[in-house]
Length: 322
Ligand code: AVJ
Image (cartoon, rainbow, N blue to C red; front, side, top):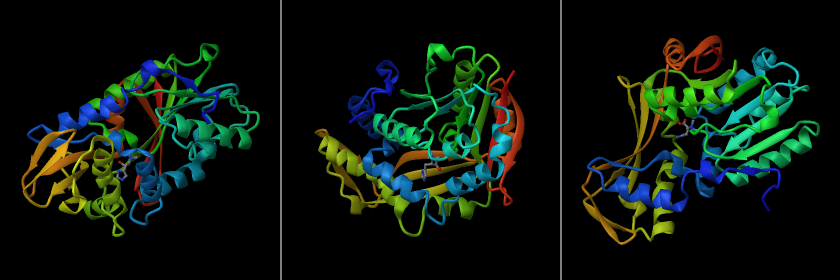
């Protein structure tokens, strides 16, 4: 039963199934085949991602949470009483609780996510844990400028974008998104962003190709979705998951590789695959602290404090709107 508090902004939502159908046929008809990573997150995909965050090889989620645990008081001390915390892609809002516990006099928490069900569940949980907190969930796509509730206009705003989701975007797209956030936060906003750091390539590849094969299942789940939703004839055993690190671009690339010459039917369209041919599904860019600060400046944000873990695996950045 969806939560009546959740405000829907259908005009801000990416088209639904048609969007997926269109992206699948368009992506698989390209010379270099692609499938957008935003379609990973159906119910099974979201479950698999939660499982990934608990894997020994996948360090980002627990490392970022530890950085928040260790520095929460400092991170929140820029939030004035009555201020507003705005989270982009809030999902479960689990990490957010670490900050909310330090913000007893927060004016409001605006959670933005495309998933109605994730927002409803999180809103109900937060209402129980923080009975006095004014939670304002908005169903919408944060890559568009989301209009905040008018009664919060003029309040000081702190944006929150954890998880290194910014890594899924190319640097040019990341600058565009940071500009969108700036327009939502201004005047004079502040932004807290989680950014995965560059490191030894072996550690990176293992984080995206774990021994238990959970990330492989997460990636190949895209083919399961296509079979279920568009009558696809993908034989999962004839494809395999792959994660490679491209040092020059500074990114992990995930691909699905065809193990043989084969033809697959999708929505009645025949798609040919050569043995060794790949479908690109996700980029995860990694930055040095200086590189990310440079990127933030080019989006007219002023880098301020940075928090990292002792092993410099992950970073949390504070950006101030000029
Ligand atoms: C949720 C996008 C941050 O890129 O590290 C995890 C998704 N992909 N394992 C990431 C993901 C493969 C994750 N983000």
